[in-house]
Length: 262
Image (cartoon, rainbow, N blue to C red):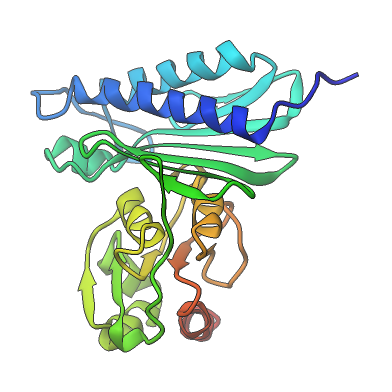
């Protein structure tokens, strides 16, 4: 017989605490002369990434030792209860981090029976904790947050982690950017934080890893918005990602689908 199921509130509480502890550890290395390694996929990694992930893993295991854990730096750890899989990006935006830019975050997502159900984005240098769980709403530092109500692309602010990569991928970004009121490069998890809190309206990523977006589906959904891949599928397992408010979703997806399917 499987162990009793913890409540979503309890799971969210552990996720918040783990993200806070792991995120705070990164600050010990922020704006320091930190050694930078290059991984096999040619992305950078530092001691901040590694130590943060270890702290998060230990915190989760302390409460739920039977759960599965997948982390960007240490890979997959099987657990006795396969219903639960925690997905960790200990330092999303490492390139920003190593340049002393404070727009990076610690990400934790939780799949329950394969469904993305809990999400936390902690921005340590800004001390902003964004979190959600299915049916529990979305909050930032304890306050309920919602996506914006902008309903025309011409009035929207759009951001993208890598505009050059988006342009190479398809013509969708140029079409959207050409109509938008404001275009910026607030990338990685910070862009999704901005959409969920109603500060911007559209966020695009032309390439996506699971740990980069594991928290985003429950966060954007509970904030009243949308998170999906460029074909429109609401998933954290897509090759790309887009977040929008509710009013712009149909307009944005019409452009993305048209361009991506060509």
